[in-house]
Length: 210
Image 1 (cartoon, rainbow, N blue to C red):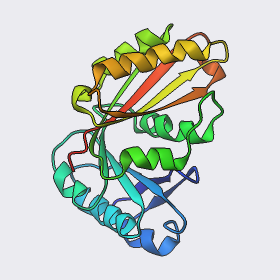
Image 2: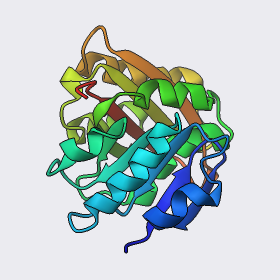
Image 3: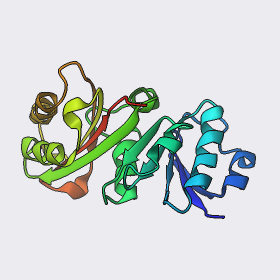
Image 4: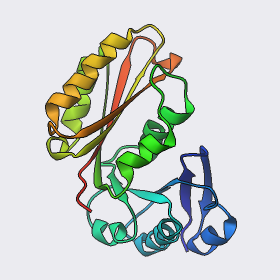
């Protein structure tokens, strides 16, 4: 039986579970958002068992998958599938958890994140890194398949300390122009001194097609 890395975003905690050990471990207590990683075609049924346990406990539950094959069976028991398209799963997790756990100009709380992911269905991910927020945003938009039809957007802009908040609004404007005019956009900003003069934009585009 395969093991999965389960991330509790609200508590910034991750552990390794099998489907048999998950429910009995107490990990589900007081959790509100769980993301399951390491899902493959061969272990999909076990991942579904994990997702069903979490979702039945009232937790917003998402999984990261590399493609859409067999996605529907997972979504039958979960809120969302984040399509990785070859991206590092840790990078995707950080794009969500950093908004809550790291200092920034615009921090979010767990309710903001769950508002985007609850019953979201397919969630496309895109990221871009450049010297300017607008260029990074354009790169992320280009990578984020289906953004034009997204109904909800979670936007993470990550910079070093030397940047004006007004510059970041330019990145948000790029996202707004690329998506449905009625789409809900929740935007957060994170400070990471290792970014230097670069800006990284991460987009999570929820289709609400569950």
